[in-house]
Structures are given as C-alpha cells and as structure tokens.
Image 1 (tube, rainbow, N blue to C red):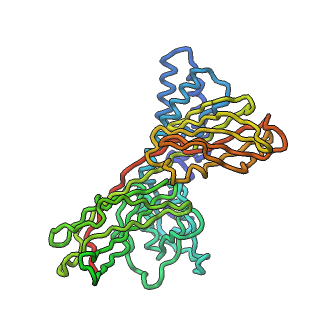
Image 2: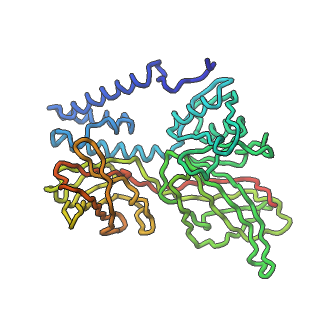
Image 3: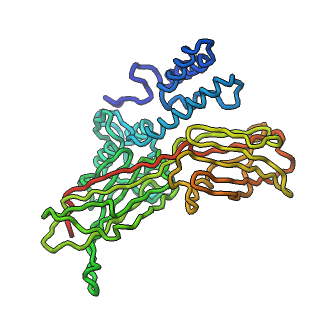
Length: 427
C-alpha cells in the first residue's frame, strides 16, 4: 500500500472517475435536450451551462450528422466554437499535479504525472542499456505545475529527459555519475507549459576580426508534449542582457527573425543568442531576458462528409476552422476528393514552407468502419488562411456508400512566451 498517495482515478468526493464521467455524459445529454426547449430562457440557460462546464464536454456533444433541429445545431456550433477557444487558451496553462506520499515507487509517480497532465512519459533507460530501478521517493505536490513536479522527481531519481529519442513523449534516462547529486533545474525557469534552461555559454575569439568575437548562449526550450507547436519563432532583438557591472550586452544579428523547426517526435528545441564579447573583467551575465513566439495547434477535430457523389461545396465549421467538401469525382482510375480548409486566425501557420497540414489525417470510411487511405495528395491552392487539397483514392468501385473523414486542429493560437535567467557565470 502506498501511504499518502492521492489516487488520480478518484474524484475528490470519493467517486470513481468512470462514474463521474457517466454522470457528466448524462448531464450533457440533458442540457442538449434542453437546447430544444419551447422556452427561450431555458434554451439560453442550457447553452450557457454547457459552455460553463468547459472543454471536457467537447467529446460528449452529439455528432454533426445526428438529426437535430436547426436551432439546436446552430447552438451546438456556437458551443463547440467557444469551448474550442477555451481549450486552446487552457492549453497554454501548465498542467497541475497533486500527489503526496513517502516511499512511493518511481513508476507509480511517473504514471500519476502522466495521467494528471496528459503528457506521455516513457522510461527510456532500458533502450540506453541502463538498469531500470524503481526507487522509492518522497513527493508533496499540491497543484504544482508539471515541469516543477517532474524536475523534483528527476532530481531524486538521478534521471533526466532525453530529447532525442525516436518516439513521442518525454523519454527519461539515468544521469551519468558525474552529475549525481547536482540540482539540475537550478537555472531553469518556467513559463506556462514551457521550460527554459541555459545549457551552454561559449566565448568565441575571432583572431582576424576582434569585433566579430562573440558570446554564444544556448537555451533549451521544452514544452509539455500534450502541446503541438507548429513552429517557434524568436528575434535576437527581443533579447536583453546586462552584465555584472550593470552594462547592457550588445546583441548580434538584432534584426533577424529566427525560426526553429519543430520535429514531429520532439518536445524541445535549442535557441541561440549571440552577444558582443564583453570586457575580460566581466564575470557573469547578471540578467538575460528573452521571448519566444509559439504557433500552437488546438484540439484535433473530426469532419465527416457523406453522400460524396452528390455533395457540392458542403461546408462544416468547428471553432476556428471551416472544412469544405467541394466535390468528389472520378479521374481515370482514381476517385478524387476536393476539399478546402480555412482557419480564422492561422498567423504564419499556413506559410508555404510549413508542411504540417499535409500530415493531417484523411481517409474514406466504408460502411463496415474500415479506413481506406488515400494514394496521392495534391495542393490546389494555398493562401494566408486557406489551403485547397485533393485526395486521390484508387478504388474498384464508386464510393457511393462511403464517407470522407478529415481531421485537423480546430484552432491555431499564436502566443508569446517570455523567460528570464540570472547570474550566468562566464567561462
């Protein structure tokens, strides 16, 4: 028995999570039914109540293809849009961890962190050829932000995150013996679901051109893997640094805008800030402040289209995205499905050099539920907020009784994340 452990599978009032979810589903069904009340006040109250319950009810709302009155469908569209916006905004807050106890096995703690945060955590030690011990630890988290909680656990277990694994999530490995006993997050700072840590300071002397000499600061920017950043941007001009004399450090390439590619399986990138080399009497950077702009995808939404052979410009909207099925037609030995995807506020997410949208899931669904993958994909148009796509399927018969299913983030959010370090010793 794990003394003092708060089991996340139970709600505070002592009900199993499954029972609580069933009750929530029943309450959502009741309120959806009330959306069709003959009394306007009742309809308005039900809509407000569903929004008040938050993003957790998104997956419990009835599907678009259910037979509902026109007003209920319109109200559900408004509810979905508002809840999706709340979900995206909520994603920029850190996941909170509540867990306490002594002599808790590491494996149980990591499982609780994963469950409470929705962040995938993988014990990667075996792949590293390291022993997979399960030491007992002491934790006391009360609505503690995820990264702070994880850092405390990893310090006790002498482990760290390995950001270069070929699988999604936070992959944990043992620290080398040279790092045992060190308090790793001493320089780390936390900003929402992001964690920033200065990892390297390098002085570079240019013997031919002393003015080109520089001080290079490398910063690791990590995010909770439940987030799906599309791209990360930063400008050296946004960085401000002061040495231990109170003098500002000159930033190199101040007018540049840097884009850091986000690989699909990674949850961290490295930022580089270049400063003019300070005088030799400077011993440390007293303060450095920077800013990162993150373009983040919201919750994945599913769009389903039936009656493909007779559908023309069928438009469906959820939150901040509209998907339009333009038509489906046969072209030689392939059936082609033409769609348009339009976002209300995509920022720079649809720039032509970013290919994330081409990785969105799309398929035909047979009556037995079987998914039929597309054989080719073409782009028909691409603007700041809209992309036209053509999916080709090699079929031995017309898709008369099939549905086209398309999945994409329901909203895209651009937000600035700030960080600040203090007392960084120069080499």
